[in-house]
Image (tube, rainbow, N blue to C red; front, side):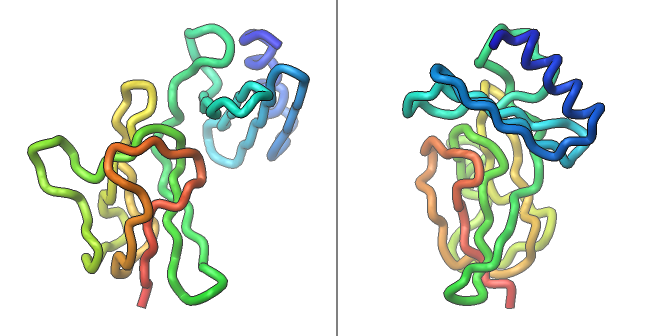
Length: 161
């Protein structure tokens, strides 16, 4: 499947109001999820290679692409207790600081509010500020600074009380 076919498939999915479509072939896997203004496309080789995220209009050919616009991290209640898991909205590199000579955005024990910048995810040379979708106290930071992260990977545990 080439890049042009993927673009046509995205247009068709948007026109038909389909929420999600998954295609698996022997050499790649394609997952298109809609629900916002811009569809999210995940293309991955069938082997255990990393997943590459891409929005619809991209100038580069085939499975390489730019990262989607920053979205607020998803939050889910943990089954064990009332902690909320803040997850990565995209793949990339996780940074706790805005630059090497600056202080970290949040530490364990810090109180955060909705809309506070809690980290940066670099994807395809774009630095995306990730804002908190929840208010509370940071209980645990689950990822080391400058580590590669995947889509939907847990980043922080937050106590909303």
